[in-house]
Length: 276
Length: 273
Image (cartoon, one colour):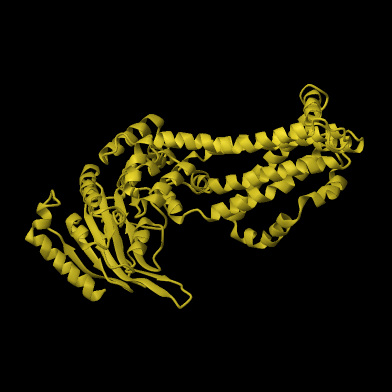
């Protein structure tokens, strides 16, 4: 059989094939999880070990503690820190990134310090943040915001610097004001990269959410996990870890859903480019 | 330089029919470069009258794009005078529309076609109902009455350039500048777009300065062809094209006069360039 024939035969079934590949891809993602889950479930089923409790009892604790029980408060306060810190990081990151983009002198003057702060592992700032802001809400939010700021800031700056000159000239010709050019042209044109920065920031924010609760804290998931571990409640510790994983997955899903809404034009245009 | 061109007539109401839409007097543009300054335009002098269709032809590297940027107010001449309706061009005036060569770079992919076309009206504070009406009107004029809800990247190259033309006509400019607008579409589409621009120019009563390296295109479209030479750019010849209008891709191009103009200009560009 020659290859042109193959092409002709395949064409009528293209839509059906696309649907079946989508299903296959979904299956690829799920089957390994299912297998690992079952292995963990049965392997740990009869475990008497204090350190590796049965998955069934972990899930039971998950339900009684985190869904219906007292640990809901820890979950709530962690998510509050995360949300407030992340939103601040996003707004400040985009704001400062845009400011540095528009003021070349400031950008040149500050770039070494920004790089220094960017490469500094944020968890080492926990003691300093505790000294400055105590151990409460403020310390955690400041720490999350500060650490999560940099990926968004640097991506915003980079994305804005990459905006096509023709798009800016076009805006000038069409009579768009300088401020209008920032909001109508520069921001949307840089949006794909800004969103990539926000996604990195989200990951950093989740890490810092936990780390900020490890030391000298009285609430939050990180506190719960450390507290459980120190009081030999390994079932509780594992349940906290699973809750963290679920938060990570849900946050990512929400992010992707928002991204697909905001950047649908970008993915559409890229898909068209691919076929041309 | 002491040789500034003064506007001939400046009346109380500003613009009169006597004032050329475009007036360039000894325009010179020098770019600073690592290997010494580069003269992009040496000495450019010409006027474009109201309603005229002027084509600027020249080989690549003749500073055509620089000239167009000066005409749009996007760049300033190093010396000499560039006037739009009698007023020196210091920034982009509201009465000028520009169609760039690369529609993929000048259309905004995050806006639908209708939103792209609407943008200049929106920033001018035109009311919603009138905006919708004007958008529908210009899209119909360029032959895309149903494309408003699409995104530019869902359309073919020729259709995208039609959108760019519609956008630059939406705010009814006095002057339309076009920088090799049909250089990146196929020949068939190019002929269609040439005829489209001749039609809408009539419909909107707009003065056009059209930059191209294609002599056939220039002769076919223009009332007057301005030939400029390569580095440094100077005007080598201004040719009045008196071919009958309306023009037609087949009969106009078969006219012996067309061949004559073509030969004339080709000789100029090839020997001087």
